[in-house]
Image 1: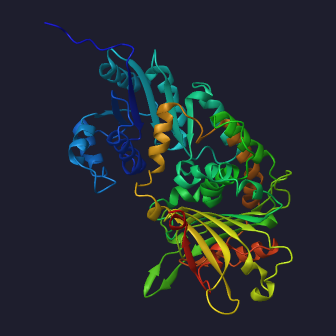
Image 2 (image 1 turned 30 degrees about the vertical axis):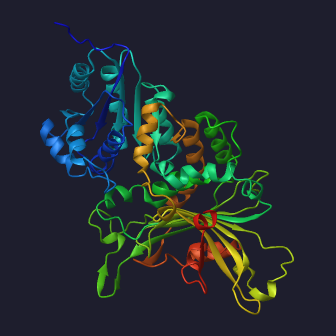
Image 3 (image 1 turned 90 degrees about the horizontal axis):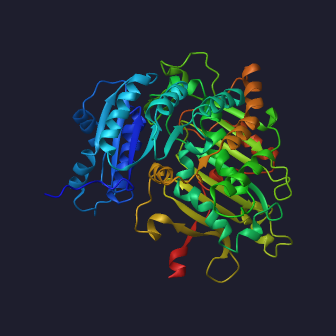
Length: 513
C-alpha cells in the first residue's frame, strides 16, 4: 500500500487573526479572507486560526464568523459550499495576549496543520495598540516559522504623536525586521486610491498639468454622516486629526503629489512619498479650524451631541471636524494650497480628491461667465467612496442658437463602466501581505515624517485648550472652514457642487465605445 507523503518544499500558510472576537475581525478580516478563498487567491494549502482571550471552541468561532461571510456577487455559484469549505479551515485558540506559554500552545497546533510542508505564517493584529508589542514579542519568540517566512500586520493607530510612534517602532523592531512589519492603512487599499498612480503616470493628458503651473489648489475631503456611535471612548483620546488626517488623507496627498518613482517597486514608491512628507511646510495654528458636533433636531428626529455619548467627558474639547491648509515647499507644488477637510455627523458621506485648475488666461468666453471666473474653472474629481468615480468638469456650449455655456462632466462612473465588483480594501491588503508586497503599506520613516508634521500642531491645540467651533449634527460643518478656504482664495468644491445651476453628464465609457 502506497502512502502519500506531503512535499516538504510545497508551501502552506497559517493565517492567525489575533483579536478574532473583535468587531474588525468579524466585519472585515474574516469576510476578506473568505473572498480571497472563493476567488482562488489563497494558496492551495492554508489554515486560519482565531486567537483571543474569549473562551470559544472551533465550532463557536465558525458560527460567529459565518454570519458575516456573504457572497459579494449574486451570480456567484455554489457559495454555500465554498463557505462550508472555508469554515472547515478555520480554528480557534484561546489565550492571553502577553502569554508566551499560550502562544507556544498555538505554535503546536499550527505545526500539526503544517506538517510535511514549508510553513509560512501571517499574523493580523486586530487589537488595541497598547498590546501590539506584547503580542509581537510572543509571536517572535514562540510562534515564528522556523523555515518559512513570518509576517505581522498591524492596524492603526501607530502611536498618538511622534514620540509614542517612535517608541512603538523601536519596540516592534526589537522582535521583527522592517520587512516583516506591514503597517496597514486600509485607505491605501481603496480602488480609486490605488488608481491614482495609473491615472497620473499612464495618461499623457494629466502628467504635464500636474504642477503649480496649472493646478490652483487640491482638496482632500473625508465626510461621514454619522457620529461616534459605539466608539466615543476610543475616539475621544485621538480626535479627527489623528484618526483621519494624519494617516488616510496624508497618505492620499503623498501619493497624489509625489514625483515619478524609478519603478513600481514598493521601496521606490515609498521613497517618493517620504520626500513629499519631508518637503511639507510646518502646520500653523491660523491655518487650522476645529469643530465639534452639537445636538440637533431635524425632521422631528433628535440627533445627539458628541458630548451626549456616555463614554465621552461632558467638557471634552476633542475635535470631530477639522479643516487644514498645507503646503509642499518644492519646485512642483510651491504655493499651491492643499486643503484637507474631515468630519463626523455631517450632511453627507463621501471621500474624494478635488483638483481645481487655474483660470484660462485671457478667456474669450469670460463675458458668458460674468465676474465669477470660478464657474469656468476645470475641476478633476476622484471620488473614493461611495459610488466610485472619476470625472472632469469642462465648459461646454448648450445646444441651440446663441452662446450659452454650462459646466458639464466627463464622467467615469465605475458601477456603470465595470461589471465586476470593486474589492474591499482588506482583500487587496491581505493578499499583498501574503505575497510580501509592501507597496500599499507604511514604512517606518514614512510614519515618522507624518507624525513630525502633525505633532507640533496637536501639542499646540492641546496645550492651549483650543475650543472647537460647534456645528449642528447633520450640517455642513463649522463656518470657520469657509473662512479658511477663502483665506487661500479657494472654494470647497464639494459644497459648490451640491446646488449646481446646470448639471450635464457625458459618460466617458459611452464616448469611448
